[in-house]
Image 1 (tube, rainbow, N blue to C red):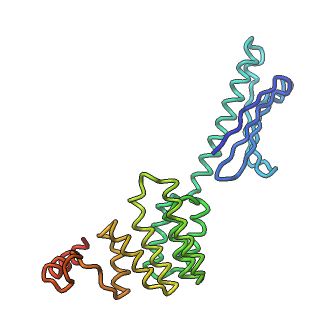
Image 2 (image 1 turned 180 degrees about the horizontal axis):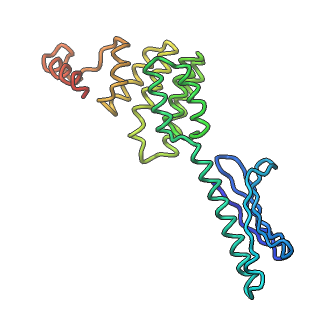
Image 3 (image 1 turned 120 degrees about the vertical axis):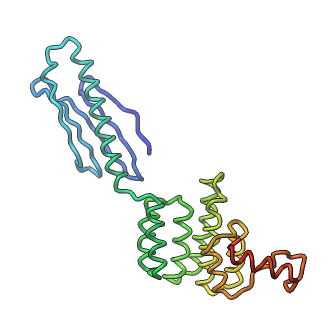
Length: 248
């Protein structure tokens, strides 16, 4: 969100502000209509149309010695309140990325991938730099629209977004990103690449039930818990059974 510098003209008695919210530009103009009509009016314009207006009478201060100073203060306050009201209305309509993810996951549980993709197309508009939203979009682009290369590339892009925007919180999201990359590979019938992605996610979060489920569906055996021993070694078998049951 960016605000332009406010400008005030004693001659025209106007105060104007340009504000950008979620990529949309709004022009706010507050004007003193003069002592013949002692009213301060604020208009907010979007794409040349007035979307809101506020009026305040200042008849009660017409004869005050500090009228001009108080008028300017009233105009600034009214301008500020109009902008804050716009922000509140704008952001009240926006779902958080967690709201979207909750809905998407619920749809995926019922195998409603097409509907989940519709929701994601809305989510990515509101949260274009959220790596998890982008990651799910890539997975479903491959799974629903059969745009395999595009979907895989979108999933890969989510890793770049994570690195750029959330460098300190990468570990929290990485497992999910690998999960969706693996799903996109699966949709493209690339089982080996899918397994490799799932395994990387599992290395980060060994209790991730979604990744464990995808690996189980693949029918590919997990790496031995102790790679320096044979898979048939009793120690590998016992530890493997234990960790599989515990998801650890």
